[in-house]
Length: 164
Image (spheres, rainbow, N blue to C red):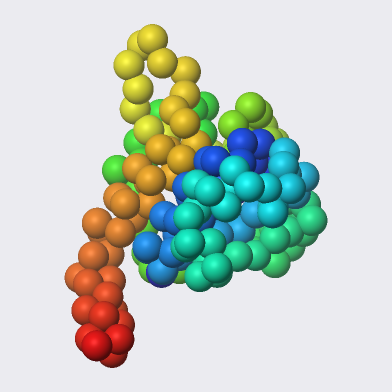
């Protein structure tokens, strides 16, 4: 369905929660090193519950390595607080890459500047600086799902019927 990309995530429960979300969406989770934790960390597994075994997971040694395989293009959406382009105005398609930076640094500034037209943000009140990574991924991913729900629903129903 979609590709969720976490660049240098730092907090294990966020990644576990996002992994669980990916399984429920039929999305692939891409983790870009360095990670702020060991992928086998109990906190990651606890947040992901028993979904972790079903996760379509790809791990990349660096963001540059990821970009060589998946260059930023019209199927890429860079989530950042440093733009005015609202996520719900973006046009999401199946197979898109929803890219999120680390909880502490976000995405590299050179990437954000080079691909300004691919940047999206979640609106927040004046007192807020950012949202939790897991919440941010959920907000954007489910807007992408909303825009593509008809096709998703058909796949979901077919998959559930095949399990009966």
